[in-house]
Image (cartoon, rainbow, N blue to C red; front, side, top):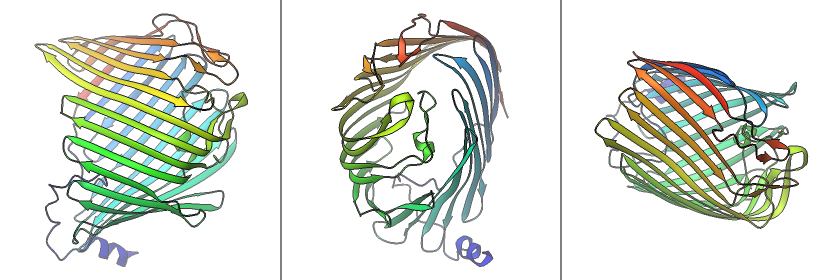
Length: 418
């Protein structure tokens, strides 16, 4: 092990060549400058909770807790902590993540993880290894995953290889990927190996400081962990482990334009599934066959300044179509966050619109959910009031689950620069 670390960290050649003209889709090979600060906030009323967020140059930690009754009583908590250790030609980033969800079931998740990258005389080596340690209703389950990649940065077109694997239920599910980087163009071909028939996936990207565009084509088995599917906003009952999904064909296109204060994105996809996971009876995960889907989304983020007034808006408009009944999938959906800051006043409005959609056994009506927050701030302290479901609408949002009445809570937020 000591000899391996020596070969990874020792470099008798000059530093890496200037890669500033190339925008990589991955990996993170340096540590960005961050504002060092600590944020502490707490709120109480019809719902209550709090958070603590500590940002340092090499150490970050975040803790939050929330108890609410939006459509069902739920308690949730999150904890993350990470430490970056930069050496001369080696970078380590150990981290740990914890998660708690109490609703009809009890979900506990602990994830230790190690990210690393190394610059050697002949290549850049990077990757990560982590374990998802679950406890669901007193049942323990573990899933391990790892990825390692290598970029031959001394060669033309920077040939790049990755192998990633998920180990669950005493079976290794792995994927091999090969890439080429030609200035701002990136080409990747990947395929599952070992326990699956080879089914290549192709992805082409163009990246620069303002534009990101990619097109992808794939088929075959889709490997994901239970944590990838886990969504606390839907009343699902998760099984251990999650079954795999498989595609006949999937075609996707994404385009993003970044103008600093204005960002726009368009994404669309067509998916034809052999096997697809969805919500079945009693909110259990089930598999259906022969499903076709079309999805499209438009995103925009704008920041505007008018004297002392700062206005920001983040909006997402989605369209979804499927030839089968997919519960809770709206044909149209709009998510919008508007923030207005004026001297010591801070107003934020979250809006969610879901079109009429199918439930498991019933038709669900269209709903509009508006959650405003109004704050007064002075220097490092902010006094705020939050309202959930401003309109008090009690419509059915999931089968036999109805939106709760209007709820209010007040709180304090402190932010200190370090």
